[in-house]
Structure formats: C-alpha cells, structure tokens
Length: 266
Image (tube, rainbow, N blue to C red; front, side):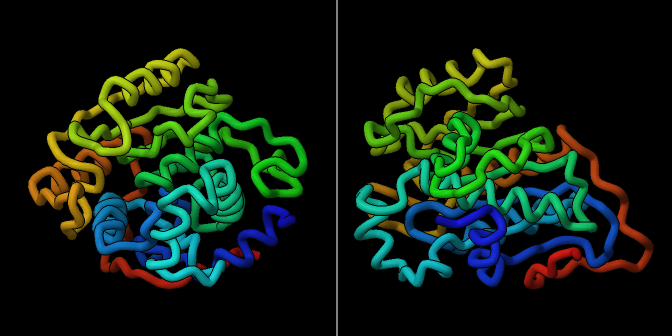
C-alpha cells in the first residue's frame, strides 16, 4: 500500500504542468482525466488556466500503472478496476505534493475532474481518511483546507458510485456540469447528488449542457458526440470559476508561458 509520497513518486513522471514561466507562488488547478485516459481536451483547459495566471497540473493515472487506453476502456470504464475510491488516492497524492511546491500558493487550489476523474474527486471530498482508506497508508496526512473549488464535468454518479450520496467532509465552491443526454445518469439523479453537496454548505452551481457525456472531447463514439460550441462554453465556465475563487498574480513583463514536466521543490 502506497503512502502519499510513494503514490506521487509513481504519478509525477506522468504529470505535466502548464503555466507562467516564473517561480511566483500561484493558484493551481489539478486535472484528472476520465476513464478513457488522457485526451486532447484537457490541454485546452490547462491553457485556459495558464491564460489567467494559474498553474495547471494534468495527472495521468494510467501511465504509472502501465495501462493502455484500450485496456482502460475494457476494465476501468466497465467498473472492473480502479473505482472512484481508489482514484481518490491519486487525487490526494497529487494535492499533497502540488501544494508543497514553492511556485504554488497552497491556499488556492482547485480540483477538476472529467467523468471518472470527477468521481475520484467526489470520493476524496467525502471519504473517511483513516490509514488504509483509499488505497493509501496515510490519507489523513493531507489537509483539504487549501481546496477552494472543484470543477466536475459530467462525473460518474451512476449505480456503481455507491458513495455518491455520502456527505462531503470538505465543502469548496463547486461547478457541476450535467450533460442532458448523458447515458450514464439522468439529470434528476445528478441534481439530487449535487443538492446533497449543497447541504454541507458548499456553493454549488449546476450547468445542464445540452449534449452527451464527454461532449467536450473531440471524438464521436455513439452515444457520445463532440459538441464544439458547448466545449467552448465549458472551458469558459471553467476559467471563470478559477478567477472567481482566486485572482492570480500578474506575470512579470516579458515573461512567457510554457508546459513542462514537474520539478518538485525541495
């Protein structure tokens, strides 16, 4: 069983950071992909975060496990492997180490997840964190106080998400994207889940997008279909959420933005 640092040691080589090319402590958003793995739409969200002065960390949960996209579709997307509570271990490990970086403001963190990634974030917000929970030896060693916001893009809240109605223990501002024709949940079920989240005191905004599950991912795999206009609106709302919870420092004159592998602060 991994500790937080051991899990991050596995994830770190498969994580990419995008942001202003400076060392100023900046707000940071950590992005978690869906069950199909890293796809072309997440860099677009990372670029939007960078444009408003945030650092964005795109975490690949499959690279360190040696899983291909086809393997993940056959196992994770079908619920055979890596259910939400296990993915929550990746969420906490990434949060722990990203928060320790000198170029990150640990008091201004957002978590963003798509489908399965959103499921993992919801489990991280709601689960008890005793030793051994979430596949981690020390999940309670990371505080959630610095998490100001969550962005949940059509997270999985179907029948296999057994804890979807479990109250959150940390209640950040949340933007929940509901796909009107999502084949994995009804709008009514999703709204019921988010009403539960509101009960803990969180400010929860729901946006019902008139599209399918994964409408912002450039692909067509019936019943899922890409909708470019809705995808653009999703990115806009994502960036607006970040700006609403924390305004980033202005970039120094002449600085540029770049993407690079993470270098941990010591």
